[in-house]
Image (cartoon, one colour):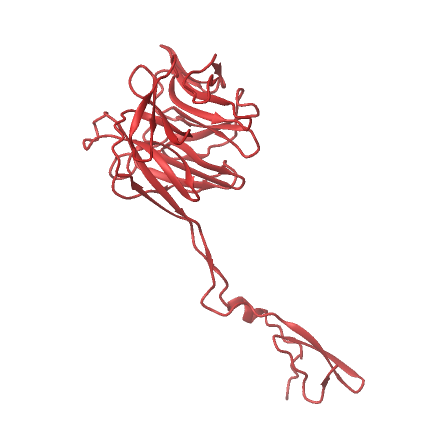
Length: 333
C-alpha cells in the first residue's frame, strides 16, 4: 500500500541543524609600560588634564599628593592647598564643574565625604559633606573604602565601594550608592561583586557599556594581589572578573581612562619583590580591549523558503520550499 506524502514540505528541521554565526568573547591584554614614574603611594586616581595625566595618590600620613605625568612618563609634583583626604577621586560634571570624593578618618570612625573642587585642576577643595551615614564604619574596620565615584550616562553619580559585612579572607563585597546630585547618596540593593574583589575603578561608563578594572585581596594561589577586568550593561550586574596576566601587571588600586578607542591607560600600585614590602610604587600600563566579533559558521546559512501555487484542471495545491516545484501533472500558476 502506497502512502501519499503531503506536497508541502517543511525545511525547519534542515534549517535547525545548519550552523549559524559564531560569536567570540571580548579579550583583554595588558602590559606594563617601560617608564620610570618615580612616584610612590597607593590608591591613585588619574584625570587627563591640559595634555598630561594628573595623578593623585595617598603617600604617607599627609594624605593625598599629586603629580603631572607626560607621555614619556616624566612626572613632576603639583602644589596642593590644604588636605585632600585619602582614596581621592574626582567627577567632572557636564557643566565643567568638578567634585572630589575621599575618605577621612578620626580616632573613632572612617567615612566617605565629598567637596567641590575650587579650581579646574582640583588642587584645592571647599567644605566637605558626608555622602551617606551608611558609608561610615569604625576606624578598626579593615578592607573597607576605596570609593570610586563615576558620572553615569544619565547624569547621576554612583560610588562603588568595598564593604566587609562578614570579616574573613576573600569575603569582601562591592557595594554601590547612587545620587541624583553627586552630594547625597542612597545605597543600592544587592552587591555588584562578591568574593574578595576590591579597588574598583570604572574606566568606561557608556549606555549599555561599562568596563571596570579592579584587584583582588590576594585570593589567587600566589597570595599576591592581581588585576582583573569585568564588564556590565547597566553598571549593576557585572561579569565574572577576568584576571589580567603578563609581566608586571600584578598589583592593586588601579585607575585609568580610555586613551583611544578600546585602548586604556592604567596606573596602579605595586609592592616590592617581597610581598611583605609595603613600599608601594606607582606603575603605568596599557590595557587593550579586542571586542567580541561575530563570524560566519562553518556550515551553510539558514535557507529562505518561498511558496508557489500549482494547478491541474480545477485542482490547486500550494508548494513551499527553498526551490519549490510543481508535482507531476501540475503547472505553476
